[in-house]
Image (tube, rainbow, N blue to C red; front, top):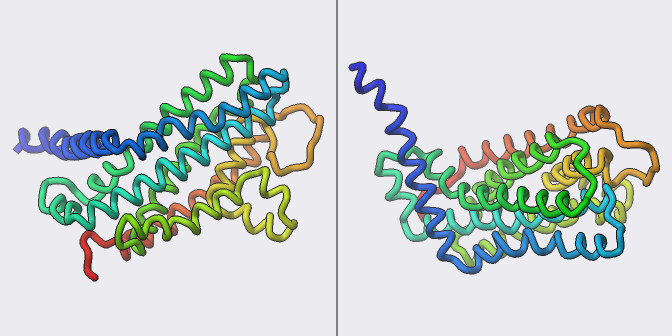
Length: 271
């Protein structure tokens, strides 16, 4: 009796590790996903950063823009789209249904699909931080805000990918069903929100990526990028007070997506 109890936790963890490793190997064999996961999230934010660096124009706002751009590339084109496409492909091929007949639990099967993108995103943000701060960029005001932005983004965009898969029949359809969230995320960029009418900008603030953008700005620059330009000194304690709303927005979207997934997620094609 005691032996069985001691072995149970280990036995339950093994399927998740094995599934995550298998998903990573499949991810690595897909040259398109690897290019999207490694090249674009790192190269696209660093190009304008190095241009600004050559002009000696790297300030807190530039750092916030660099991390925000990385978050958009990593969360949208790596985490969200890779989870959506992998889950849809596995379901169409009957893999998800077969996996459920094994020892893996439902949450282990779904978590495994999130592992490759999450790993690349974490590695990418470490690389971005090493390059930008190592070349003289101003240090972060609140590291916790940046960490929460990435962690919360990985959770909410993974859940939104699973929720989107409910309406996605195949990988070709994923290119269409992913468009609304992609468009909403791009509009959530701080540089775009500042150009919108006040009412529309306030609405966009409640979208998932806008919340992540705000957290990245608070962590990198100590103030919201959508706020009026100010020469006021950065306030470390003030960033904590402003983190409440974006964190609540991410939690709300995560809960909404989780409810949809639990109620409607399909493990096999039913027409």
